[in-house]
Image (cartoon, rainbow, N blue to C red):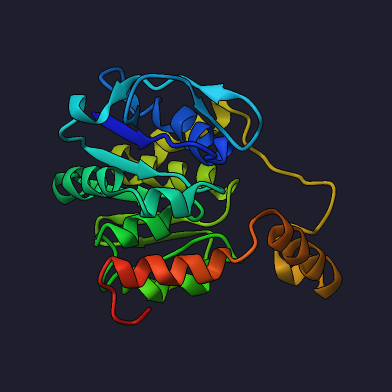
Length: 229
């Protein structure tokens, strides 16, 4: 089983490393690659870099394609080489998957048209720009597309995919091995739980960090030929 993750500048590292840790336990024959244009270190939005294991031209296919999200999503959608690689590998993969805003990248590559999909709650309403139907669930499975919600949902997504591939018993052993038994100290992990004041604070912070990001995404969707943009 070959799992290929897109690794790109300003990725949210937990979008990638959470599910990568889980999916590495699919079986003894599992190989996980972190793929970018070159094998030079790639900076994440956490302030440290991750080393790719392969370059685009070294990975022509994979059983599972997984695309994480992060602040660098728009730059990936604007990158013809990255979008072409995703479309090529995703076109033949057994499973086409994403975490967080990575679903927007899948959509830009033409891989979510007519599919139900999830994303980070703040960006879920952007999915129709790329022909996808947004779903407010932590994990969304539609045929061979499996998409996770924001960041930490990547672990839930990976356990769900593990169960679909290897069976529920195997997935439960993996969950136990990682002691995945969340008990957050606050009930603020969703807009509904956080309340309007925290949601407003989050949106203000994001606008400061990436002003005009939504408008840029709409323009990129139009550039990619999506008429709904």
